[in-house]
Amino acid sequence: MTNLFRSLVFVPGNNSRFLDKAKSLPADIVCFDLEDSVPDKEKQNARILISKKLKERKDFKASVFVRTNSPQSGKVPNDLEKIVQKGLDGIVIPKVDSAKELKKIEKIISNLEKKRKLNKIRLIPSIESALGVINCYEIASSSKRIDAIVFGIFDLLNDMQIEYTKGNTIGGKYSRYKVPVAAAAAGVPAIDGIWQELKDKKGLEKDCKLGKELGYSGKSIIHPDQIKITHKIFHPNSSEISWSKLVVKEYEKSTKKGKGAIVVDGKMIDEVHYKRAKALLEILK
Image: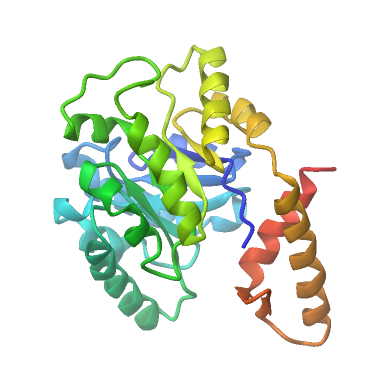
């Protein structure tokens, strides 16, 4: 399954101006945030703002995801109650330590989908702890909903009681190397962690190149100015291009016959995958 995961940009869910500006962002995934960028007293306000913005889904260029609070926070049920609706493409679940945690969340999502008559919502678990790294393959392969996994460097360093140093060349090395290996074994892409130094564009480019060499498909982003460099480095490879061409060809052939979802090389392909394949081919023009 080919998806565009070059950039996942986080947008604070309690900032209505930023949420509105996200409509024009050329990122592959825009992720409204309910977690780290939102203070506790602002959580409910952020849920309401995000819920309203999801109703304007057609105005966004990118895929639209929401990052909930962590499984350990106890806030996920309240997050899901408000955000699981039409207009939501997927959910990023932060600080996932085990597949068991993910299964509990998936059950809540399934019930809301049935109740609200929604299409299946996709998931991106985020690996941000020592336990999450150990269980990374188990997490990545635990559900057909999983589109990708994300590596979160800062909470991992905190969990391991390692001081942050620019670039984190030593502290998170093993974990950063392991996550894309586990993702590839599970058959899903991996998205690398953020580059915190906003003014250091050369550092960002170097970090993106390292991430690509490690097997990551893209990068988490905290500022729109980082999108251009990230897309430059994480350009689609030849196998992604070939797969996208096949998906577009077979899906269009199927729709002409009045059919919907199809199977290509043993993988289920629906409109979402078709749109992403088209989008990937568009950036080559």
